[in-house]
Amino acid sequence: MAVITIEQLPARLVDGRTLAGLDLGDKTIGVAVSDRGFSFAHPRPVILRKKFSLDAAALLALLEKENVGAVAIGLPINMDGSEGPRAQKSRAFVRNMAQLSDLPFVFWDERLSTVAAERTLIEMDFSRAKRAGKIDSAAAAFILQGVLDRLQSLDAADRTEPDPSSAA
Image (cartoon, rainbow, N blue to C red; front, side, top):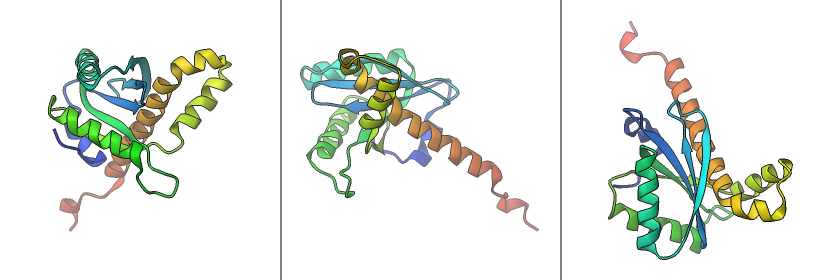
């Protein structure tokens, strides 16, 4: 499947489907999955990266188990707004996944998501060792929560706009 915009997401999230969030790292893939009401992001165990075919198989199995209808993937944009090698790796990952699955992907600017996730884990008093094992899934949850919040604001905006067909 192709990359879609956030505005196209609601049409893909029907029939009890959920939304997944990914934080793509060199050693792990952080995963989070939404509830069916699209209110909360729930972290899942990380996928330890081996090689693409094994990573993709593990990810697709998890996405199927969680009844995922679309995937939001963090796009690591530089602070100046440019895209570097890490962003290109994320785009390549999505291109490769598109050959294996019909699931649509949405890119989400993930600037500072890992920093925010780490601060949250520190506030929760996780030790450095425990944070290391949870940081990527926490970052995926942070990314996904941003997408869920955006979907909620789009839905609210749609409800408050006047219906053009009812204008006299």
